[in-house]
Length: 284
Image 1 (cartoon, helix red, strand yellow):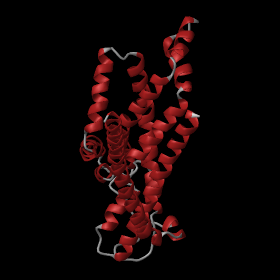
Image 2: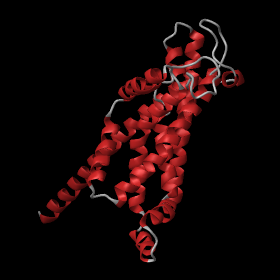
Image 3: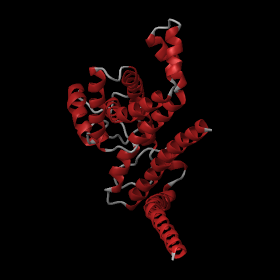
């Protein structure tokens, strides 16, 4: 009887373990399947639009076949570059303060601001920047779009950098301070270099986060079918081209919208892969 009870208990534990394994595995497989369907759909519909002209030419007028998204690629690089130039220094300084002065009132307020920015819908940020900058300057511009994206990017980068800085051994700072190095210089000269790889990962995640944002750019960069290199003027962007083309009645534009979506997905996927590869190398 005792041996029978022991066998029954063992089989019950095996069944429970198998059930729990499947309970964890099935949602993971479902998420992977959904991701695969999305990527495959974008690839199959978008690959037909890819050719040299697609990358080298600008948009054609309404109804005209042909053209490309060169203006959108240049515009996206411009607004993403402005967003990174604005958000990365601010995020580094904010993360440093949150780590070095974690119990201060300013850190509590800063943490509240970062968390609040994380939860504000991107379209609201676009409307606010429209009221602050576009109306004040009297024109849509790539610079306004970059500022809007910077506000969206700051919470992601700040949080990522803060987590990385907390992983740096405290002995690094203690050794520098014990030698008479000012705390601010130790932070800039020792703490940040020690976390350089993680900071780059955080920047990559932040850029991936804002790459597909459309709503803020509608109110700030606005879009431009022509090539523009002036940050003070309206500019195109890949998400804006996707939005404009996919709602048009022209099959050729629909195809180009899928092609632009494929470029955007490939860019975000490459960024995430690069971040993952750096994390893997770091763990080794």
